[in-house]
Length: 615
Image 1 (cartoon, rainbow, N blue to C red):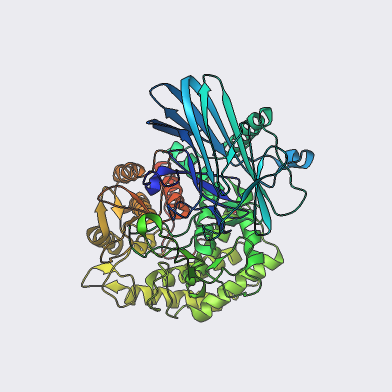
Image 2: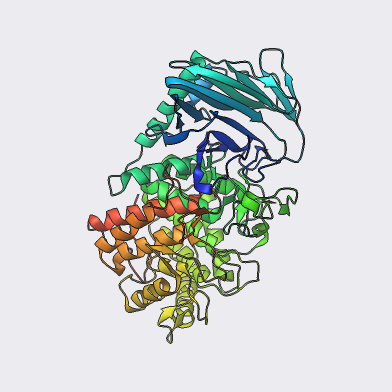
C-alpha cells in the first residue's frame, strides 16, 4: 500500500510535539517520521522512496474521497474519508501535555496516536504498518511483545505498536482489514524508547483523553498570541507551524522537518533542512516576538549562547538542535528520491560556508528582544560585543551568502547590508544601556565604511538598481530588504527603481518572486514573495497594492494553510522542503508590517541607528 498514489508535496500535513514531526498524506499514510529527533534516521520514509521507504497507512478499501483540517487552534490533524457506503474520520497527532501532567503521570517519551471513528453507515478500513529502519536501508522484524502489541527493535531503540484490533504479523509488516459500523472506534499507538523499562500506553479512554489534552495544550499556546491585524487565520496557522519546528528541550528551531524534497522535480536541488540555521531561527524569533511569544525568543537566545560557545566569536551557519556542528553531507544513493529527484542527502555541506549576514540576523533578533523587555546578562552582552568586533574586522571579506551557492565566495550586497545592521543595532543597544562596553568609535567608523561600500559599489547607475553583488549587474530578492533594516527608505528613488527592476527581472506572476535568476529556473521562493509585500507596505507603493499581493500569495498554501519553500508558478505545486519555516516567517513578518502601517506607525528610520530601543 505504501506509495500507491503519487503524492505532491502539498498533499501532506504536519503533526509533532516540538521534538520531532511526522508527515501525513491526505490518504491517511504516515510517510515520514524521524525519532527521537527531527534529524534522526527515518523509520517511515516512503516520502523519499515509494518502494524501500516505510509507511503506516490507515484508509478505506476501494474508492473514497477525503477532506481534512486541523482541529481549530491546534496541530491535531483530522482527515475525513467518504466512501459510497459510509464516512469515517482519522485523527492523527503526536500527543503533547503540560509539564505538570508529565510529572504526575507516566507518559511515553515518543508516541504517535491514531484514532478512527465511523461516523455514518459502514466503511471497511485497511491498516498497513510497514516500518523500515534507517531510511529504508535496513530490514526490520516485527514480533509479538507478549502484551498484545507488536515490537520492532532498531539500533539502540525499540518501537511498540499497540492497537484495539488484532493485526496480522507479516514478518516485516503488519496489516488488517476491519469493517466498521457507525459509532465504532479503532485506536492505534506507536511509541518509541531507547531506555528500559519503556512506558507502553493504554488505548480506549486514554487515547480519547490524550487527544483532548493535546488539543487543549495547543489552544492554550495559540491563545497567548497577541495579534489583531489582517489575515489573522493565516498568521495563527503560521505560528502553529513554526512552533512545530521548535525543539523544546533546547530552544533550537529547525528550518524544516524534511530532507531532499526537490526544488525542481526530477533534479538534484535537494538538501537536508532538519537543522537550525542561525538566520532562519533568528527570523523566526523576530516573528514570534511580534506575536507576543517572549518565552520562545528567550529560549532561543539561551540555545544560541550554548551552541556558539566553542567557536565564539565566529558563528557557524547551522547547528544540530543540541548546538553541535551539523553532520557532514552524504548521499543515500539507494533511495530513488521524491518522484525520482536524486540524490537524497543527509547532513549539509553549508556547514563549512562563510555567511556573514548571520551576524546581523542574530544581533537584530537580540535588539528585537530588547525592544520587548528582554535583559542581557554579562555573558550575553560579551557574546554580542564579540560578534560586533568580528564583523568590524571581517565585513569586507567575500562570502558564500544567504543563498548558499557552491560556486565560491563573492562580495554579496546582502551580507554587507547585514554587517551594517549588526553594527548599527549593537551601537543602539549600547546607547540605550542594554549592552555595556561596546567599542563605540571603532564600530561607528566601520558602520560608515560599510555604508559607503554599499552606496557606491552596490548601486548600478546603468541598471538604476542595487545589485546582488558589489560592482555587479544582476539583482536578487534580498535587495527588497534594504528598507526593512533601515538602511534606506522604501520610497527613495533608488529603492523604487530597484523594486521595479526586481519585479521585472524576478517576477513570476500573482505576487510570486524568484530569489535570483537561474536557468533552468527553480520555483518562486516563498519568503522572497512575502518580502515583496513587505517592501510595498513599508512605503514602496500603496497599502491596497500590498494587500492584493498578500492575498494572491495566500492561494499558494495547501488546504491546511502550510507553505513549502518554493512554488512552481506554472502549476502552483509546492516545491522544496515542507513545511518551510522561512516562508511562514515571511508571511507573519509581512502581516505585522501591514498592521503597523495601517495603524499609522512609521517605517524604520533610514540612514541612522535604531536608537529608540526601549524596554
